Image 1 (tube, each protein chain N blue to C red):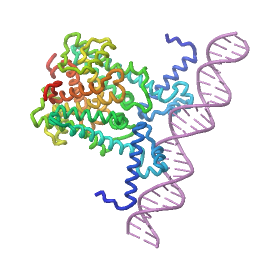
Image 2 (cartoon, protein in one colour; image 1 turned 30 degrees about the horizontal axis):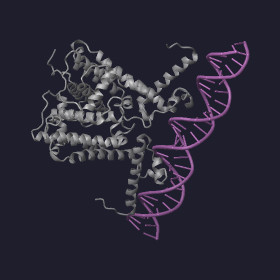
Image 3 (spheres, rainbow over the protein chains, first blue to last red; image 1 turned 90 degrees about the horizontal axis):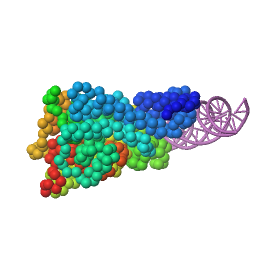
Image 4 (cartoon, chains in turn cyan, red, brown, yellow; image 1 turned 60 degrees about the horizontal axis):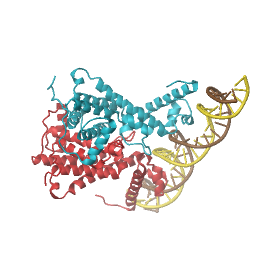
Length: 241
Length: 241
DNA sequence: CAAAAACAAGAGCACCGCTCTTGCTTTGAC
DNA sequence: GTCAAAGCAAGAGCGGTGCTCTTGTTTTTG
C-alpha cells in the first residue's frame, strides 16, 4: 500500500531519500563523526532547520543509515551465497565461506558504514527495535547453512558438554527462530558469528597492520576454521571435486 | 633520566597528568565523542586555549588516552594470568582462559575506553607508532601461553595445510617476536586473538542483546573453543585435578 | 641583569545541533 | 469555491565545539 496521495507526499519521500543519499555520501567520505546536518542541508540547497522536518535529530538520521547498512551487508552476504555455482553451491562449507567473503567484500568497500554498525555505538544512542531485524540477517544466513547441513546429516556435533545457562539461551534462540539445531551447535554458531566480525574489525580498524599482510588468504583460512568449529566439514585443499 | 630540573617542569608534568585524569573521567562518563577540550579546561579551572600548550590538539589528547588504555588492558590480562594459583597456574588452557577473562573484566568495567581502542577508529586519526607496542600486550600474553605449551610438548599442532602467503606472514611475525612456533600455530593464534575481541565487541556493543543472556558462561565456553583451536588441551569439565 | 622562552588569559573565527518565530503554500472539510 | 488547518522553508538565535592569534606576565637561562 504505497499509494501516493499527492504532490506533497511524493515530494516528502523524494526529499527524504535525497537527504539519506547525501548523508550516505558524507558518511562514506568522512565517517559518522563528521556527518553534519548543516553540511547535508547545505549540499542540498536547503537551510539546516528545514531538515528537521524530515529527521527529528541527527541521531534519527543515523538510525536510518544504520538500518540501511544492516540490510546492505545482509544482501551482500545472501548474494554471495546465492551466486555460488556448480558443486560448491551444495557444499555447506563453501556456502559458509561465501557468506563470510561477501560480508568482508562489503565491509572493505564500505568501511565507514561497517564502522557505523559494528564499531563503537554512538554516544547516547540506543538502538531502536527497527534495527534488530536487519541486524540479524548475516547471522541468519550463517545459521541457514548449518541448519541445512544438519538436516542433511552432514553436521559433526560437538562432544563437549554445554553449561545449562548457555544451553538455555541456545534453546530459547532456536525456539524463537523456529530452527531445530542442538543447543551446542547453536551456541558455537553464535560464537562463530561474533568471531567473524572480530576478524573483520581487526582488519578494518587497523589492528592487523604490520601483523597480517595476506589479508584475504588469512581471512579464508580463519573462516574455514570457524566452519570447522561449528561442525561443517571443511574439505582439504584440492581434495574433493 | 627523569631528573626534575625545576618548578616549571614539575608543574608541567603535574598539569599534564591532571588533564589526562579529567579527560579519562569524562571519557568514562560520556564516551570519546563527547570528550571536549573546553569541558576539561573548565573543570580544571583554566581557559581552553591554555590546554593547547599541553596537547596540540584533541586528537593528541585522545592518543595519550589510547596508549593508557592499551596498557591498562594489557596489565589486566597479565594480572589475571599471574593471579592463578594452584595447579591451574601451570595448565595452559587455564592460563589462556584467565587472560581472556581478565580482558573481559577490564572491558566491562571500562566500556568507553574499550570502545576507544577496539571500536571505530576516530575519523581522521592515524595510530602513531607509540600505540603499536602497548596494543600488542594482550596478543603477546596469549602467545606466551602457547609458546610455553609448545615448549613443554603440550601443544596439538594443526594438520591442515597453510597457504604460502599466510605462512610467510606467520614466519615473519615469529621472527620479529623471536618466538619459535610453527607457522600454522601462529596463524591460528592471530585469528584467535582477533576473534576474542569479536566476542567482546559484540557483548559490549549490544549485538548480544536478546540473543545471549548468560554472558559469562557463554564467553568462557567460546574462549575454551579458541584455546582448542590454537591447540591447547582443554580439560573436560571436572576431568583433571 | 637582561634576553629568551614558557605560560595563562582573552577575543575571535568558523563550525556544530537544535529551537523558535515568521511567513508562504498546499490540503481538505464545509 | 472558501477558508481554516496543516505542512513547509527560511531566518535568527542559543549555547556549544576545536582551534588560532594576540597580549601581557612569569620563569628560566645566558
